[in-house]
Length: 225
Image (cartoon, rainbow, N blue to C red):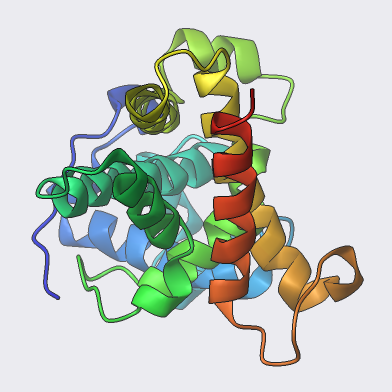
């Protein structure tokens, strides 16, 4: 499925809008692939500059540091996930079916046919899983929050919370369950591939196994008396 997706990013994330130039777009596209392959800790602007055939100074003209670049990439990812939730749940009436579809969207790997940009979708997914929490687990979290740098993540969780309230208006913890679902969806995927003893997975490493657990987790909470 080809989806045309555009999002306006927070201007405080960058020094120069990377979407405004071909060099900027190249920085984002290549940065996604490199962070996915190397990991955030091993990734540097110097390595990125070599990969794009430019200078480290050029990269710094767009981003103050690699943490801001990581937040940019993760914010883009969360904004797209929210777009997918809106797009794919639009014609679903049953609240339970909406939640099951939501879970299917969060566990992306079996939806690989969806194409939404020139960015490497698999690399984005892996970055969100392995590096996403590093965007807010930092000493700068409060200042970044004041600058609304986590708005896409909070908006996604807010939309999910509304789905839970639609299913059970009396449920007391929709926001807590929403953020728990998003984080757990990622952590269980990571565990399945790297620390399988932390979950019940078959050797096939089927993402549907994660979805089954998440459905039980969510509906077990929403239906509890």
